[in-house]
Image 1 (cartoon, one colour):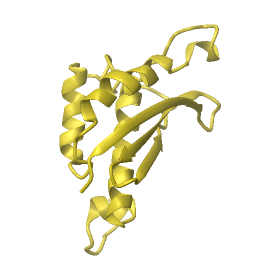
Image 2 (image 1 turned 60 degrees about the vertical axis):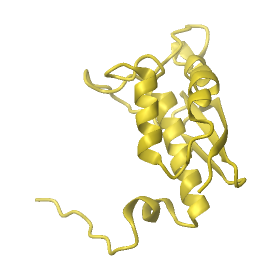
Image 3 (image 1 turned 90 degrees about the vertical axis):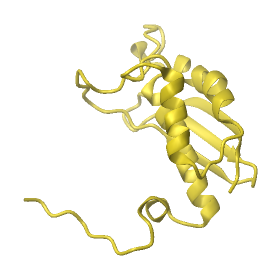
Image 4 (image 1 turned 120 degrees about the vertical axis):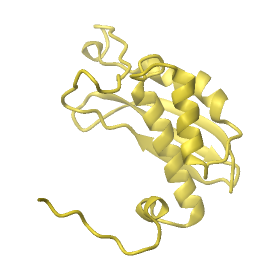
Length: 146
C-alpha cells in the first residue's frame, strides 16, 4: 500500500478535439496512474458540472485551465499523503472538498481525472488489471437486457 506523493494535471485534447483534463498520480512506490476525462456529448440538468473557462479566445470557451489549476493546487494538497488503496475515502475527500451537490466549484472533470488516475495507480501497484482491482477475482456475469 502506497500513499500519493504527487498529482499533476494538464489540459489535453480529447477525440473530438475538445480540451479535457488529464491527470498523473504518482505513488511512493514509484507507480504512476494516468487518466484523461471523457466528456459527454450531451449534458442533463442533474449532471455533475464540467468546469470550463468560458474564454472565447481559447477553444471557443471550452478550455479547462481552471480545472487543471484546481487539481494542481487545492486537490493535490488534499490527497497527497493519502493511501491510494482507499479509493472510497479519496473520492469522499474530493466530494467534501468541492462542497457542492453538482461538483461545480472544483469541476467534475478535475475530480474525475484525479479519481481515475488514483484507481489506475492502485491497480497497477496491486499487479491487477483495473477491472479485477474493482471487480475482484470471482467469475463475472455480464448483464442481460430484459
